Image (cartoon, rainbow, N blue to C red; front, side):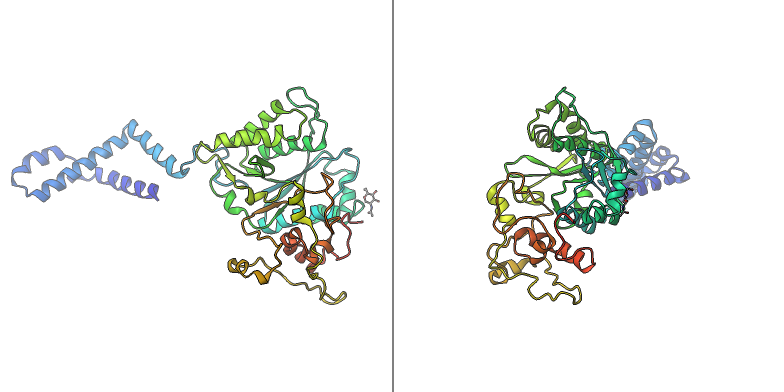
Amino acid sequence: MGRTTFVASSSWLASQRHDPRLSKPFSVRVRMRPHLPRWARNLISIALTLAAIVIFLLSPNGHNLLRLCNKHTLTGTSSHHHDGTTEIPNTIHFVSILPDPEQDFDFQFSHFLSIYAAWFYWRPSAIYLHTNTQADGQVVTRAQNGTAGKWAQSIFTLFNLQINQVEVPAQAGNGMEIKELEHRSDFVRVKAIHDFGGVYIDWDVHALRDIAILRSSGFNAVAGRQMGDEINSGVFMSKKNGRMITLWMKGMHEAYTGGWTAHSNGVLTKVGQRLVREVGEVLIMERNAFAPGSWKREDCEDLFQVHADEPSNLDNYEAGKARLLPLHQEPSDDRWDHTTDYPGWARDWSSAYLLHAFSPARWGYPIEGFHNITPRYVLERRSNFARAVYPIAQRMFTDGLVEIDDTHTGF
Ligand SMILES: *[C@@H]1O[C@H](CO)[C@@H](O)[C@H](O)[C@H]1NC(C)=O
């Protein structure tokens, strides 16, 4: 708005400059002064001031000032503009590194839930899969034609997936060998967001609502904290070549120890926090925004435990009838004040944009009533995880993409 006003008045001034009545201000002033009333003299001094401003603006110094004003309003208060746009691109990036690039993808129902939710809530312009197998090779064909299971087929055929074959680093810049596949994936994901710009999510991260407001916030990068205050590397977004992602990409090669998080969360936290002081560079979201739970036993239990005393959402479903299941939309604000409307263990996900569902399998925690994320487990709606992702599974079921008795592997 400031810019519009400024340009309008300066062009008005420019047109006034050629007005013959203003072309000889000094002689006018000297000759007429004794006979003029006060208001006229004020008017003339305003005109003189304006004329002086016009002359200044047309001088080289004035040009610089004009340029500065324009730049300031066009770019807001952001001091860094990497690709000339104000938004983080609406592209989603997944990474899947195969231990052997000739081996089939091992996608499960939970992965289909993750990609479908991101596609449904965010309506991305593209979804990328960065992987170490050939984009048009046998492994991709086998995923597409169902040989690698129902969920791989769904993932490879429903979203116009853009497959990007990448080099997987086997060694960090400091000479350390990168053994774990997860760590290789860390290097690939950071480079992907650096090169493309967009939103990265792990396969165990589930979108619960739109994040467009975060992408268009004006920040060049957005990330979120996890339990213990570090920034989590399972969800992050950045403009192409952004400062945060560039510094992280460089820093992770030096910081790599073979340990779990030094090169990932560790460097991201250091770099991300430092850049907050630079206007518009990094927005750090609080823990509940992206990673409300944690990898600890009690948090995994709270998320996945099946509450057998809760009636199953499938109790009233008659197989063979229309594919109708209740919607169970997210409760309104005041619903959470009526404790009889939901079970005592049910969690309010209002403050989460994404649910990073840290898997209990990684640490081998046994969870009551829980084995795998299957369609039935989600559609029965007897756990906090199931309640969070149910709206997506309900849609999949209604659309015929999922059967109640499908397995988690899709075979
Ligand atoms: C799927 O694709 C693979 C690789 O091209 C091929 O060998 C296989 O026969 C195909 N299977 C089906 C069911 O089409």
